[in-house]
Length: 349
Length: 76
Image (cartoon, rainbow over all chains, first blue to last red; front, side, top):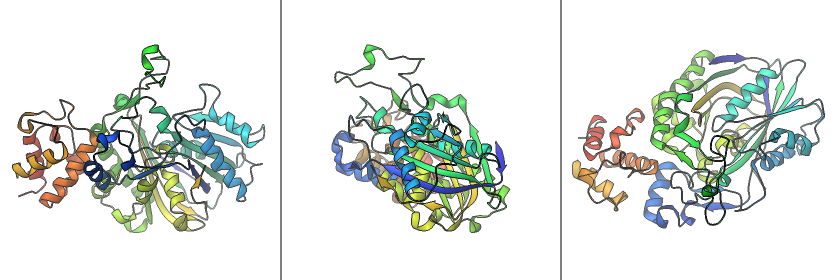
């Protein structure tokens, strides 16, 4: 789906991660703590440190998003005129109600402000911006978009899951989108390939496979049966993401030279480098340092890069392309000019 | 070239005994981190840059396929 949306400004971004930091070399469960092997993996993927919730922490992705939103309010964003809260997550606080409703209450938002959730993964920030932008108008001028995941919680009993554990961090972001007739258009290229939904999924715990006794390990931890066909996801990414980036560039009439930065989902360093080669874009403009410090933050990955690079983005003007890809399988790109946006540094909870 | 590739696989996965006759993907022997590491080390060893479009399960399933992969990407 290609779409242009006018009169939308991304006006503030904040990100929150748990204060606990772990290092890939600390986990003796991964490859038996084989340092040489871990060094190779770290060097080729870029993953090193991550911020994750304490085991058995009562905090959720919703709490991290709430904290990120509160930080915006502390820094001058007014909450009185927010007319919608959209929470995008794969790991809600409850089955019901939507986590957005819980946060709406915690933040003390008005009854005129609606709240709802969207279930999306690594391109959830793009889906969230599309949803918010589609709603903004002269009558609905300000929306709070929250995106976050607590991926390490859903690992449950799979603490030695080789494909997943060393890469995911926990995090939540808050973004304010406003109606602004002077803003640059948001140009979207998005899609979903549901025929490959099983390539990346968590099978257990929903109504298709409800919890049964054998889904719990001896310590009482639930096995969500997370699995990913990493190579298939890579193949999908290489087929889909470079054309998606080119599509939004073409519609905008931009070339690589016009673009200041590419803010891509922090899947891993090698994937990002391959995307640059395939899309024929300058790899130096792809921001990658966030993944070695925070890991793959799933939904919060793109806004975490913006906040981690706040010196570049805070109250500045930059032509950017943001691209997410992952579970669904889904993808989405946005080309726009980020202008005069309040960008706060990543905060710890 | 074949011996270099074999050594790289062996260094990364010393637990795989019969590299010549293993179907690495079909038998579930290599995970995605192994593949990322192998691509990176093939690139370095042969001074090439393996095309992302070539990073497919099939191209990593056997030693022969990996030899063809690095050849296709310019290794001499």
